[in-house]
Amino acid sequence: MQLQLIVVIVVAILAVVFALQNAVPITVSFLNWRFESSLALVLLITLALGILMSLLVSVPSMIKRRKMISSQQKEIQELGKSLPRESEREEEGKIESEESKLPLE
Image (tube, rainbow, N blue to C red; front, top):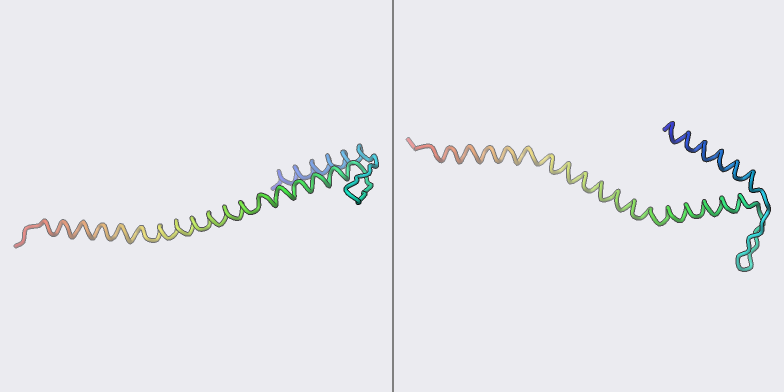
């Protein structure tokens, strides 16, 4: 937790330094839309949009993986509960087979 906080603070400091060093105003044109802002802001917005798109692409596989893990954990619990019953059945079967081998008196 503390390591994550340190990493976030370092990244924030680097972003501020980057923004201060790249304060040159630029104009971004896309079709009929024009946007004028500092170079740093445009680059940071582009970075944020890239991160957002990568998250949107990876979220379905993350959800699928979590569902699979959840179902496998439930199956493990069910198998763990049935294991003692199966071992009792095996012991009963061994006792019955040993009793059948004994000579009748």
